[in-house]
Length: 72
Image (cartoon, rainbow, N blue to C red; front, top):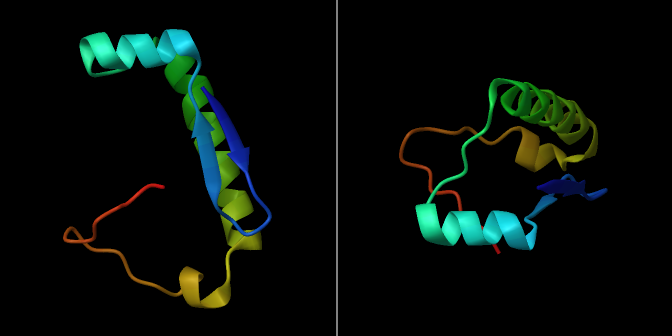
């Protein structure tokens, strides 16, 4: 999977054909310990970039358990 972060703070997560087939067949992706480590590091970098690129009104929004996350 490839993370492509945009200057507005949004991000696309692109999956390879192999990853799409795994998701379709198994309904999940399994990450090894090393894979999870790299995934976590990538997420942390994205979080740092978000804080620099998001609009102020987006940064100030609160999140709770009832928030729905919708993708496009």
